[in-house]
Image (cartoon, rainbow, N blue to C red; front, side):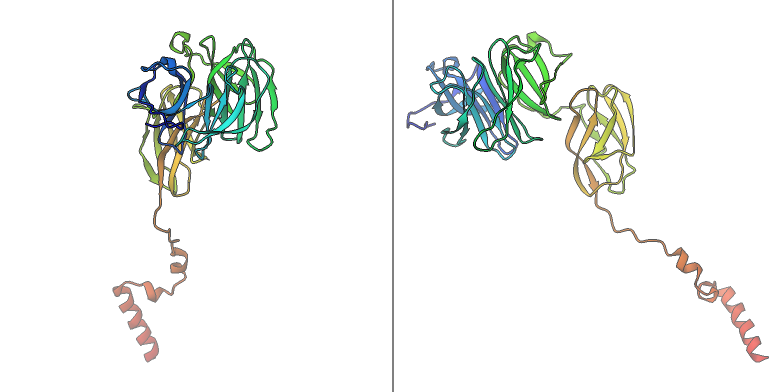
Length: 334
């Protein structure tokens, strides 16, 4: 692999990634990691792609001390430099092929800790900065950057190390104290009850993963007219308040237990849709592209009303018709 400066940069094993992120428009996981953690022991940081199965990074280019990356849904990759960078607290876009960053603008405020995360539902970037107490701010990605403060310090949250957007204007945030917290776009914090600190030490980045069995939807399809009973298997479904298929509320649903919900589909548009269950958590349980509304033949309205207005002779049985004919003949003979 050849870096931007023309220096040969071999593949490296990443043991402590500074930050990593994958986007919906990208087939690669992109990472920035401290080179001192890699097998060939160089100072500084570099940008590359990460094989999540082996932990091997294919280095693309050396870079400044970037501390966080964030993808947009269209595949555009942003990065922010940390307080220890040559040019600190700057927002850049990355060329994913060459690793060359392009300056977007300056970010300010706190001392250590620079993390960015994109709310794709609001089309707004969020930024955490600061050491002991993390400042949270937001800005749309338009020039010049106009930064709005969200909070000058969220109680129960230290320096932010990593973040992932989980939907419904909510972020899963990892801090310096190995705590996992949910933070809304308004800066409201809640605790993730089953997140054990020992499992989440110094998390800098996370990746979404397909839910393995028994997380599934059965059956996988049904008529667009609705009326199909569908069983949803997942976790944390107790207390569910709504079920939707492609954004359309189910005709009815039943919470069987914490891992199972049954729902009857309402009429929907033909095609593949997401299935979502609104739970007690601030984000819905979602099975992406999990159910298909089948396109059926056009319905033909019954013609019973027209048939009942047809003259009796037109629908009479052969025996009845013969009797009618004899009666008519006799009437005409008279």
